[in-house]
Image (cartoon, rainbow, N blue to C red; front, side, top):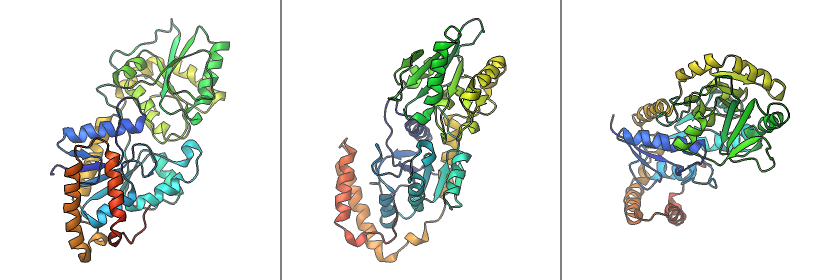
Length: 379
């Protein structure tokens, strides 16, 4: 298979920035290490694959939206294939309208990837009807997050429990984290040490918990490995990245039975439902600690496996014929002109570091070419 040119609609950032950012970085590194080119714009007329991470125009780091993708496919390159990775839903933060918006945005996609079976079923029940979809499980970088040099609990010292989150929404599990914090203060002061790494919910104050600011990379991995058990109490998490990083670091997982979490943790820890059975589940994990400690070496998810599945999907889609809807002889001249125009525009601006300037120029020019507006409405 020839090397591909892949455009991703969200630009990755350096440092701690949440699981979605890590996904982009890991995938980009894998694709490029296998000879493919990764860009974050639509200025190249020869893009093979467009990957939608977030279709929302106002979301931070979003470089272009489904409307621009539709324009590109219609008027620039009808051979390009679009993959929509869905990792968000209303159930996650008790919002409304996200599922509907994502389903409408999905009209431009040739293929959809869900990050868990749980999320796939959420969207099917919300009206998602495309037959072209897969579930690809997430993973972290195993060169950084691995079980080497992890701590071992000898039962003669306080049990060290850790969790970490970039997001501070209450549904990240702060009901349980505050409950554990209070329980340590009242009963388990010399038996349990709890560490929280990341951004705290602004409405909470912890008394017995060690708070560490957000970390990333090896620094984060080393902090995780200093502990014995990883706790995640996140509610309706479609996939998440925090528990995957901890599992790859070799920590047995105490996890809430919610969202897509069990798909990543079942068999590698103990589940709980809420406050009512939290310490009962913790005791079960403590009693079987050695078994789970050894079992963590078999944890099956990492970014290499995940990225390989994406590349296999991209290669398969690249072989498919162009969408016949987009083949229109009446616009062949316009397409040829626009290809050259955008090519030279890209050459002109390729040294400008502020990519948002490119986006503003492009949107202005598109408004000035009404004859090329697409007849099919896409969010």
